[in-house]
Image 1: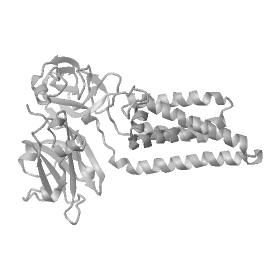
Image 2: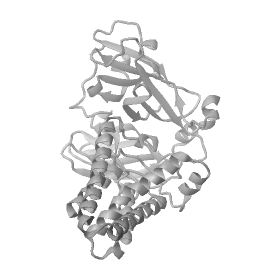
Image 3: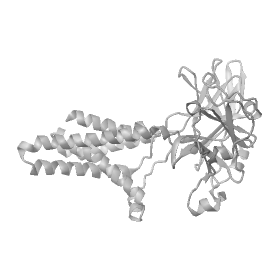
Length: 406
C-alpha cells in the first residue's frame, strides 16, 4: 500500500505542478471566494472545486490504510495541499489559494470516511481484497488522467508574457563590461523591484547592477490605472565575450527567461547557434525582428513596420480546403477600447485570427509562403498569442510581446 501512496503523490504533483506551463499569478487569499462564486451560479468554478475534492479522496483513503495513527491523516492532507500551493506560487505553475486547501481537505476527509465505512461494514475475510481493489482503482483512474493530460501537453505554452513587460532597447560594451537599457514592469501592478541576470550557454548566472530610469513614453503608451513611468532601467555587468540570455526575477519567484539574448554585437530573440532564418530576400526578414520561431511546426513570425509576417515552408500543415486557421489574439491594458462585441461578451482580449490563405501575400518566395497582418493601433498591446487552430482546439501556440517603438 505504501507504493500506492507514493505513486499517488507523484501523480498529484505531476498534475498540479510539474507538467504545468509557466504563469505569473497573485495569491488568492480571500477564503471561500470560489465557493461564493459557485453558489452565485459559476458552474465552471463549481466543477473545479469538486475536482479538487475528488483529487484528495485517494490521499485520505490510502493514508488511512497505511497509517496506524489515522488522526494525523487530515493534518497531513492540509500540509500536502499547502505544499502544492506553495510550489505553484514559487515555481509559477499555478495560483496559490486557500480555497484549494479547503477543497483538498474536504476530499481527504471523504477518503477517510470511505475507509472507515469499508473497515466497519466489510467482513474481515473480504476487507483486504476490497481495500486493495479500491486503492488500485484510484491508481488506474489517476493514471488515465495523467495519460490524458500528457496527450494534451502539446498545447501548453509559457503564458508569462501576458503578465509582465520587458524590452531591451540598446546594448553597449566597454571592454568586458556589457551594459543595456530598456524597461520592465508587471502589468496591473504598481512598480516593484526585480533583479536582472545574464545566463551563459553553460548555465552560469551573473546578476546585473541595475539603475532606474524614468520612461514617461512607456507610461503614455500603456496608459491605464497604473503608473509605469518609473519602468526604465540601465543595467551592467562585467562578463566575458559571448551570448547571454537575459533573465528577470521578481521577489519570491524563480528567475524567468525574458526571451531576449544579448552579446557585444547587440540584442536578438533566439539563441544564435540554434536559429535558422528563412531563405527569403525581403525587408521583413532582413530588417524585421523574429518574434516566434517554431521549427517543429515549420513556422517563423517576424515583426516589421507595424505588421506581423507568418512565414512557413512547404512542410507546414496546410488544410487542403484552404482553411488553415492562424490564431491571432491580443491583450491590452486598455480593454475599454476593444471592439464592442468583445466587451458585450466580457472577452477582454481581441481575436483577429483568420485563414492563412485569406491573408497570404501573393509573391514568389521560393519554397516559402507568407501571411501578413497589421498590428492594431487602437489600443496598447501587452501580449500576443498566435498558433495553429483547428476545430476549436490549439494545435500549437506561442505567447510573445511585440517590439515597442515609442
